[in-house]
Length: 147
Image (cartoon, rainbow, N blue to C red; front, side):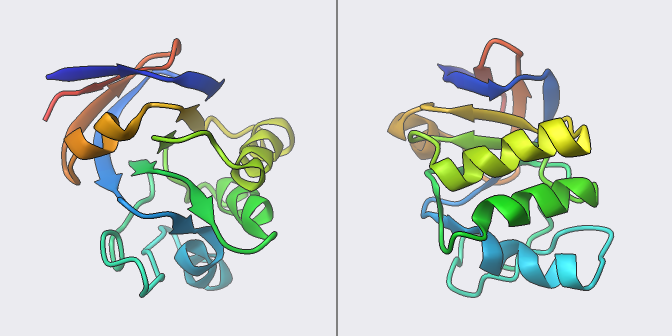
């Protein structure tokens, strides 16, 4: 068991499974097919991200360094939250990018989403957590990898 403390962007308490990308996550490529199909869950469609391609990330903690891609990133996050097919949490090892932050804020304010977001968890966080690990997230930004 290992604990990390990050900066809270969107608070919440949660316990569940991690899905880990060690590279930047392209929000449009990751979420677009599921959103366009009006799917009940997000199956990652970004073929360029071998860490998470083909995985169901709905209701899980998406652990990542940062999001990458086009300026649609925030809107894509807001959209999946409005559809209730979003990850339960976005856990960033680095400083959150402005596009992901805007999408999470819009989802909270406009969609009443309970999506959790914590950033600045550090490189060691991504070195430690593995897909399938159980995580415990606290409102104060503490993330515990239970494994």
